[in-house]
Length: 303
Image (cartoon, rainbow, N blue to C red; front, side, top):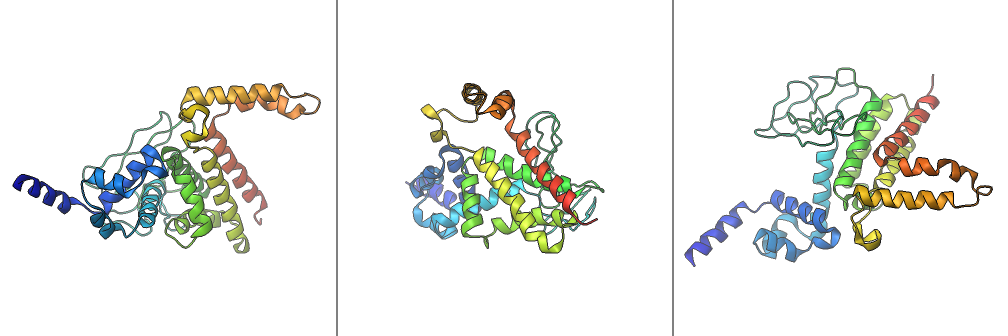
């Protein structure tokens, strides 16, 4: 009994808001929105509901905190316009500095990813996350490394890919981002996304009167595309995971054949692109959409 009491005391001592939020993210990743319950949290953390509510207030607040944590890890916090190496980056976390030569968090390392991509500069001092060949990587979080002549377009792509990859990794994230954008734009997440997108758009020379409309258009495209590509397993026939190559290939093959079976006189265009649709890669297509918007922004700006 004494040993159990001491163990319980140690568990209570290490229980924190950060640990609760991390556990909530783990539950959401494993089972979606329905998996995040007070019972699941208390069992995973070996504590009571009262201790959890002491740190997070309620489950809605916990869900928001989980979303904010994932977005903070995925997005670069904007540095001042034209910021280069060595420039201090926005509101920085304790112990971190911006640009080249930033302070490392002790023992922290980056996450490995897909081969060939430019690395994601993470929290100050983190090593990069790699990605797919030919695609630019995510820019870092607070104080992440930046080249001395990084273009606004590259900063925008970094933000877009950060959101896309986070929503791909956390299937529950896209719906929460959309809800916060439409229902609570004054919360912590939407302002960070708009600021991260808006500063480089401003630096592209977008007229001041078009800042909101241009940024909103880009944000809505990014969140819409990430939501489309982050479907839950329940949406796939048979409950198969939608992110496996086999399931995706079978789905695209079925869709491609269905398009080719349409009357070619009534649907000549679909016949022409059926094979392209089957062979396309979601992340590359997403980035191509961002580039189309940026091309329009660049073409329409005052000369």
